[in-house]
Amino acid sequence: MPTSKRLNVVVVGATGMVGQAMLAILAERHFPSAHVKALASERSKGRTVPYNGSSITLEAIDEKAFKGIDVALFAASTDIALMYGPIAAEAGALVIDNSSAWRMKENVPLVVPEVNREDIRDNEGIIANPNCCAVPLTLVLNPLRNAVGIERVLVSTYQSASGAGRALVDELAEQTKAIADGTEPQAVVYPYQLAYNVVPGGWYPEADGFNEEEVKIANETRKILHMPDLAIAATCVRVPVPVGHGESVFIETTAKISADDVRTLLGSSPGIIVEDDPHARLYPTPHHVAGKDEVYVGRIRTDPSSKNGLALWLVSDNLRKGAALNAVQIAEHAIELGVI
Ligand SMILES: NC(=O)c1ccc[n+]([C@@H]2O[C@H](COP(=O)([O-])OP(=O)(O)OC[C@H]3O[C@@H](n4cnc5c(N)ncnc54)[C@H](OP(=O)(O)O)[C@@H]3O)[C@@H](O)[C@H]2O)c1
Image 1: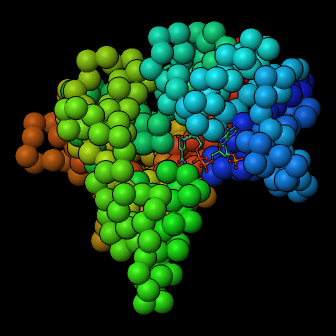
Image 2: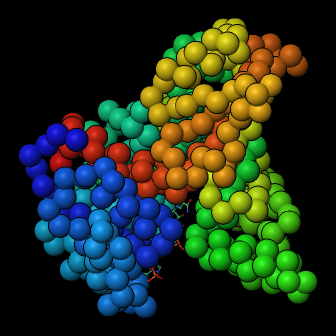
């Protein structure tokens, strides 16, 4: 991206799944950095992480770590974001946080640049990066909303192990190996064995029977789209896939639209690739989409069971567009808008 500014950048949680993807994406996209710093816990201090063909020595996070920083990309826990986000913002950094700590706060923009980039201007030092399922969902809903209006959304997710961090990816690999070796797989990180299984839970259950992930997807979708009354409900399921979240989405639109017109509309929308020819066995799968930047959409159908209903399947890399890439894009748009 063309800019004369060179920025000091910090990645918080640089050893984690999202933090590592952030470092890779900053380098790939030639983000205009003067200096990139990597922070993690005390445990990681002194170790190195790869960056741009070289490596960076990890520092432990502390209150002084944000002095002189222009952009602070947070990819650690909610607690770390709550504790250090305001300190980083106070030190003059634009904080872009991947946890759920700040997403629903009134004075914190929740941004998918292709959908609501102007909201970046409203920040008071902290911008939140949405949930890894809400990002691709809103990217796909936005062109439909603009073209024909949206009345109601029902979404079922097929979420990969990496969405729960490195520990579950490792556990899935160990369980798969144990099964192949004929030994008993151990489930420590997740409440159920994930290998050879699908699990409709593992997130904190809310009182009404939904869980925290399902509530996040509904509330964040409403906030990103500026549709506080949108009728939306989610069912979240963890599947034994390392990277890449799938979503089966039913949408009731205000005006009717054909499946062909949806293919054309989404195929010409930024950040979306339509792969939709079931007769040629063309539809997106997580295995194929992992490592890609775009949200892939297929299985587009009109839903005969409802008036103006649509059904579709989407897949995105939860570590990239669902997290790290979207965060880096927010920083790029903040530069373009003159916010940093
Ligand atoms: N994974 C996804 O698809 C995804 C998508 C969207 C949002 N998110 C959110 O992004 C954040 C990171 O997720 P992740 O999947 O990358 O998790 P992860 O792989 O478990 O990594 C967690 C990171 O946090 C660091 N950390 C832990 N305790 C710390 C402390 N006391 N001080 C400083 N750093 C500390 C870890 O450093 P050490 O190695 O030193 O412990 C590690 O770098 C979470 O809030 C998650 O909810 C994740």
